[in-house]
Image (tube, rainbow, N blue to C red; front, side, top):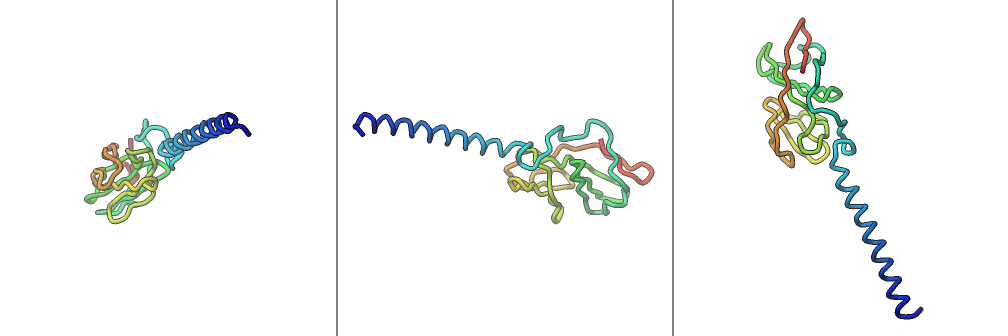
Length: 143
């Protein structure tokens, strides 16, 4: 192989490596989207009222995660309820659990206070959006 053929081959190989690297970077960035990183897409708060179930399922002084509805509800005092979106404000992943009053995002480790929606640990920078919630006939209605 001549020197010019060898140089041309290296140029082609470098170009192919650059394309593969760019594709990998694009895939990594896509992994932070709500669609691919455990999120379910769609709005962070319900567009219309959603029935969550029995109000008694949320313990006084505690909280309950309604993962399939993308909501978390706390009960600071008997008969008082606060609700927040359970969709992380960083990349849209849905919280997976509550541990000691903190909602956990499984994708990048953000933590939120489930009684206030406040960010306790990033990378999320914005609090969870509040959602109106009320108890009617022993059932919780959010949205």
